[in-house]
Length: 125
Image (cartoon, rainbow, N blue to C red; front, side, top):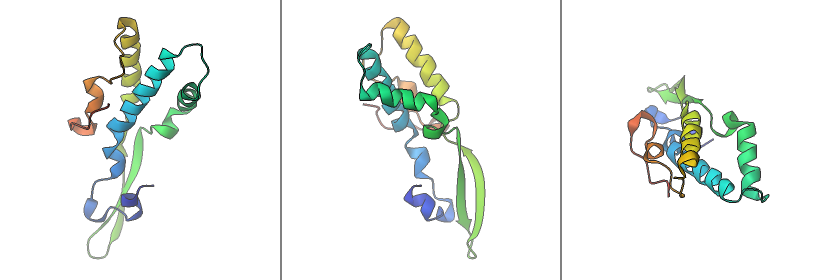
């Protein structure tokens, strides 16, 4: 858990998990790209990509449980929110398309720099 989660998101402060989605997707893109560049050579990158692909929900959960405290009595509330949603499917489709077109030169497409809710995130480089 992140420190914001441990504090119970007082006054519904945003969760840091949602803030790193675009960074995590960009990192996965770069790992997949590095793995593709070294086809036939066993590497730690390949092992890591394989580990993620065996259980993607563990590392890139579709949703997460957002809990917060509210009011002077600090009443605990909880809600399920989208985290990665279907973005892994989109990433895989973009990666396959880039393979077919030979475009994956190390940078993630702009679509991956956009976080949940359409907010622009940080660069994926």
